[in-house]
Picture 1 (cartoon, rainbow, N blue to C red):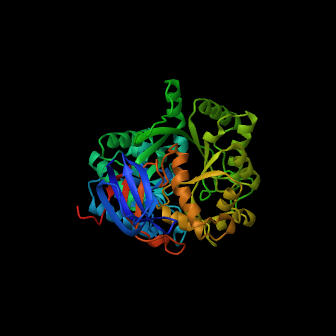
Picture 2 (picture 1 turned 135 degrees about the vertical axis):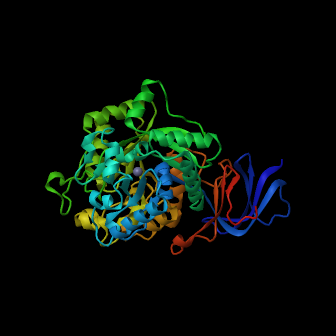
Picture 3 (picture 1 turned 90 degrees about the vertical axis):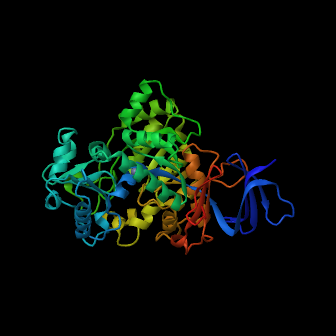
Length: 502
Ligand SMILES: [Zn+2]
């Protein structure tokens, strides 16, 4: 037999001995200790000279489409103050005076010197003719200037709009590009650039949450072989109902783009003090001291039952303990079967009892270790808004592991960077959050892939798909933010090689 590719002298993390890896038809085949006198023939050979390999990452919770477009206009992820954010938008508009709209993305006022919410008035000072939207990092809230408000006012449910302050929440924000459609050139540039960034971060597959427009564009680009990243897509409740009525089922196969899940929201965010909790937020407005629940038990129960019966996976956004408990009590009340197809997104503030019940029911969890890095250190958001005993049990990944839950990692694009997330849990400020480096990498590879339904990805063992990231150094607790991905392979095919000759 002639193999397609032989990767020689590789260190497969966390092992230390050198290995030769043979790849055939996109899969790992033989894996042998290096230095054997005879090797099998292969069409191409890559000598890694003791470089480290890991399975490529699967980011199980992304908003790739929105993120891709945000990156090529104005990204506010790194700005340190409100003034900086406004200046960045002004500068973009001066350089691109003909742009039909400016969608500035990913501001997080809690990471600014002074945490204030942007205002319509300030955005109107930048332009009263070009629509400007400033979208918060959570993706659920945005501030619009007057021309932007005018554009959507007759198209969306007015309940979501505060015309005075220019604040828009939920549905219209999640579908922002439906109202301000980007040009085909912009889309193309955005997808390519975002895919390169995924490769730079070692990511080969994502669990994607986007609008119908996003799904269409991703599917089209993938059919035209412009996208190599694997997309496991979700649909919202309305699209799900249409699919179900039309007799459609989720896909099981290994297509580059495949539909896997129904995505629903049960509560808001900790930053917005809208995650549904059983305690009272510090300094909460009297109107919503314990956050908000977006669904009633009966509605949730019926939806879960019907989706699980048809073998859909269901990804449920539930951050606060009250939202999490609602899922568990609904599942128990209706004696739901196939509960392993339920996946709770975020799961930031569970009670210890809820963790045990999740383990008993085999419910999956998709947690964000990067949230620890973003908001869990002393003085940061979680400590600012949560009572002390709740703060000390936020994102308790170690407890989740100890109590034997099925869980995987996703970034929720805050930011897309697995090693940043891994660094969060490995060096976390609270012992209940701390995982070992080996465990954390496993969660971001094998467990994330499996959670999306890809049971033959995320490990470097014979029979698995050959998805690999080649690293510039062997990871340890102290170098995680310095690690660079030097090459990427998906299904045994080289997709990223910035230092290569060709
Ligand atoms: Zn999300």
